[in-house]
Amino acid sequence: MLIDDELLDEVSFRAVRNERLRMNFNLHDSLDAKAQRLLNALEPGTIVPIHRHCHTAETYILLRGKIKILLYDDKGNITETHLLIPRNGVYGVHIPAGQWHSLEVLANNSVIFEVKDGPYTPLAEEDLLQLTDK
Image 1 (cartoon, rainbow, N blue to C red):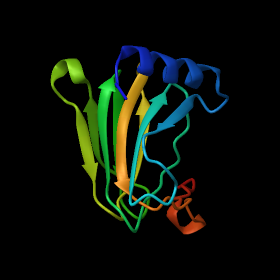
Image 2 (cartoon, rainbow, N blue to C red):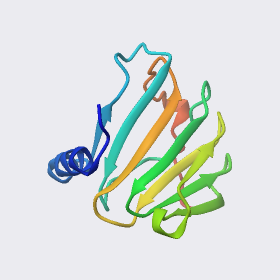
Image 3 (spheres, rainbow, N blue to C red):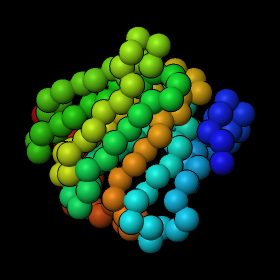
C-alpha cells in the first residue's frame, strides 16, 4: 500500500464528513495486533479528551497540517506544549506511557501517523482526565 496524497485526501474527506471531525485508517490487520499503526485524519474542532495510555507509549508523526500537542500533570495543569508543523521541520512527538495528553488541530486536512503497542484497548474511565473548575 502506498501512503500518498491520494490516500491522505480520501481519509481527510471522510474526516470532514464525520460528526467527530476525525477518521482513522488502520494499517494493522486487527485490533489484536501487537502494533497499532494508523493514519488519523483530524479537522479543527475535533475533541480529543485529555487521556493516557498506561500500557503503552504513543508516537505521532504529522504528515501534513498543523497540530498542537498538550501534555498535562495529574491535576490537569498543562506542563508542555509542542507545535507540530512539518514545513517548519517539527514532525512529531513521542508520548511516554502514562502521560496525560491531548491535541488541538490548527489546520484543515491534518493527518498524523500514529503508533502504539497493541492490542487495542478502549480508554477506561480512569484514563480520562476530567477537569474541574477551580
